[in-house]
Image: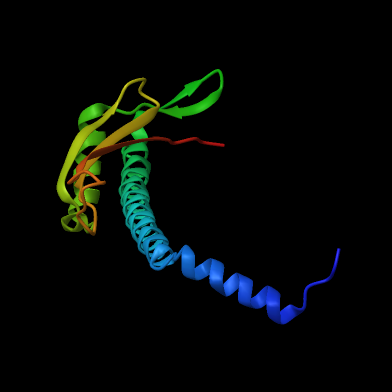
Amino acid sequence: MTARSPRIRFAARIEALRQHPENGSTLVLTIFYGFLALVLILLVVAATSLYLERKRLFTVADGAALVGAEAFDLDDVKQTPDGYRPTLKSPKVAAAVQAYLAHTETHEFEGFVVEQAETTDGRSATVSLSSYWRPPVLSLLVPEGFRIDVTAVGRSVFS
């Protein structure tokens, strides 16, 4: 076997490329990966927007549940074997939640609705809120929007 010179090997490679041109194959890959990156970015933006909107709604519901759990008079506090416990009433919880939401920036939520503001056991306040979420950028891959619901429970405890 004889060793071929580098110049002959280079010329053979050039001739092979001339016989089998691959012009444009990297352009197709570049376009595909650019499209894939754009789709991925749009999906991440929509998912992040949905997550943040749900967290904002849950923060409002959590504050409303805390206010509802404190909606009792001193006459409603009774002595139990576990200590002093307040007794909540659903109308007072609902009124306190409505008063709280009147001073909260709920106008930023689209289709904001108080689904539930009551006490089920007389010791804790349950608040369910919902609003409509829309993605920041519309695309074929993400729905036009949907209703998100959150529920928060607050309990007042004496120590």
